[in-house]
Length: 279
Image (cartoon, rainbow, N blue to C red; front, side, top):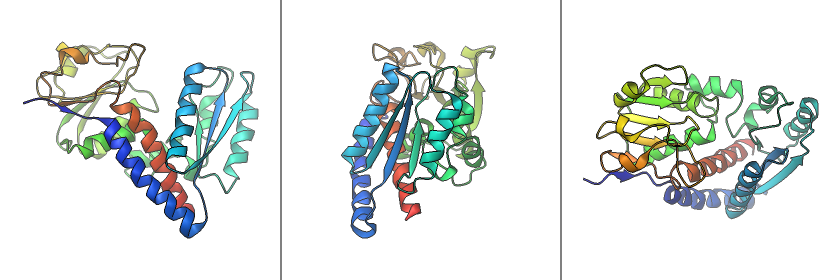
């Protein structure tokens, strides 16, 4: 039987249609429009592209976005002041600080300055802890998008062994906690892990979140596994060598068109939810 393609594009379009209807309700009944504020520090072209894509997505569903561009020389205190201003703006329901920031900035301190109710990208320590304890919180957008994909395509998670390769605070760690909360048995692997290929070979669900192109070889992955590739690199390849596993796995996320579209759709969904709670 052919593998199930966990297509994020189709699901993201469905989500945007539903979100457009919810935004219209907010406009008509409450007289308010959800606003997502994005902060870009420096001149990284990839980050600028991501911010622009998020702004365009806001437009598509009738939301508004405020784009704040700060110079490469911005200090931690200057960025904190900008975040404080947005925290105090009642029009803004969501705040996104684009990662990465220049090296002179204390990124963690700035992430944690975002008000919890406006942390729609799930980057604060408090938000992560709340989510990990299985309490209501906005999860990191990419991991939450992955969970949305798995749920939409009715992938069994409970009782399965999930191996997450990568432990970043906005991807590897939160997706591990989300899978654990969904009753998977979770192994987190990282740069110090020994016997990585053997561990990956035990997985019913493999999540590639390591940030290195085709680092996870298809030959490591057992037949019938669910393969989730959260990476994206030049040339349209991910963290997993998908070409050698798509004919053997139960389901997989394509690159591009799998996890990526779900990140932005989830960010929009969490911003709209924050707006609904606000009104």
